[in-house]
Length: 381
Image (cartoon, rainbow, N blue to C red; front, side, top):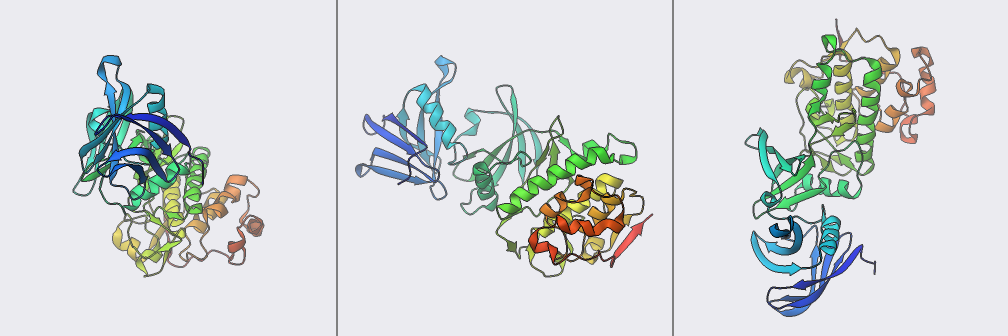
């Protein structure tokens, strides 16, 4: 049996005052000596299946130090425990992101709405002096967005903004995330004619690809990469957000996305894979380079009538862009292929030397490499 990542004793003060041992594992929490309706027993809480959540109790007389926790079910407080501050702090730290907490209003103060629609609620909250964001989900144990966030909590990446702590009640799930204000649109507005310099674009695009490559390596397809879902920290670290349309697995037939960023295969009844994300990043890349997308409306997107600007002078940038926007997902580059492109490595400047790129392609892609087709691509002057 695996050893627990946390183990400590606490006092159960409901039903009977008795000591229990709490063992925290990567996939479950076990309370030994738990006093329930059937007497003393071993109680197991599987994180992905339990309908219990935890409310943390604080002592307002001791500067809101944590003094205990309560097991809640369907919004009802059921079993209460107390213990030493250090042990409770350790328990809260290891359970964060694994099991839902209860009653976020106890720990945060509401600041303002960021987005409120029929299908989505996002608002800003304050914990002490730290600004955070809460995204509200419908409570559903099969909710893919919650599953993705829990997976990323175990396998984080600096360029992915996931929720490392979430709250639950009888109806909804509340994902807690760091607040970052600047988007790619804000960045673009800093430059004349909205054309971001190549030396600014390069590290941003590379970070975007690194974050997406991390997703793909864990069989997560984002499916909604766009300007609004890429934020920047003050030092311009990329943070990819919003896994509301994501899918777990190598492929999916669930068709969704945002008009202007959707890959051709989504409209052609083909299987959707991680290559669809690369197409969306290609649209982002084009917009960073030119200030414009490649489609004017949904009809153009559905018809595959791309408009690639003729004003992109950097040959490496143009070559990478066309490789990302290839109409055929089998010929389209993977995230790894993109990161090995000379736009980042600086190994060539002339398109005639493109054959060198085969040295960087992933094994799966090498036999597929061939010149980019210009079919269905029109130039926007």
